[in-house]
Length: 82
Image (cartoon, rainbow, N blue to C red; front, side, top):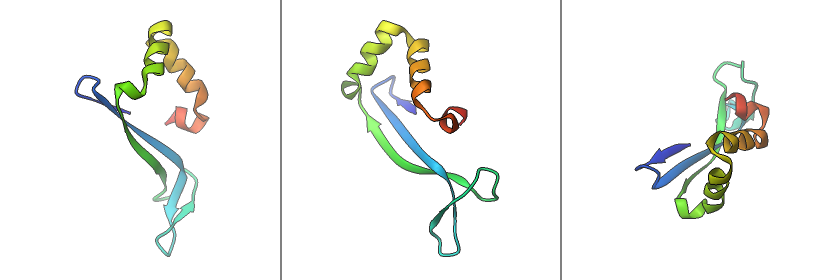
C-alpha cells in the first residue's frame, strides 16, 4: 500500500501466488525458491478516503496498531511474511 498526498488517496496492490513464465510466455505456478519466480500482481486499485470510512472508524476506535493486527489476521501467512 502507498499513501499519496498526505492521505488523499491510497494505492493498494494485491498479490496472488508465486508464478514464473513458461516456455509460451504464460504464467505457470511456481515456488518462491525457483529461479525467476515472482508473486503475480492480481490487482492494483486507487482508493480514496471516502471509500474507506469504515476502516477509518475502526482505526479511530481501535488505534492503528490494533487495526493492523486485525488486518494481518485476515491475510494469508504468505502475504503476512511478504
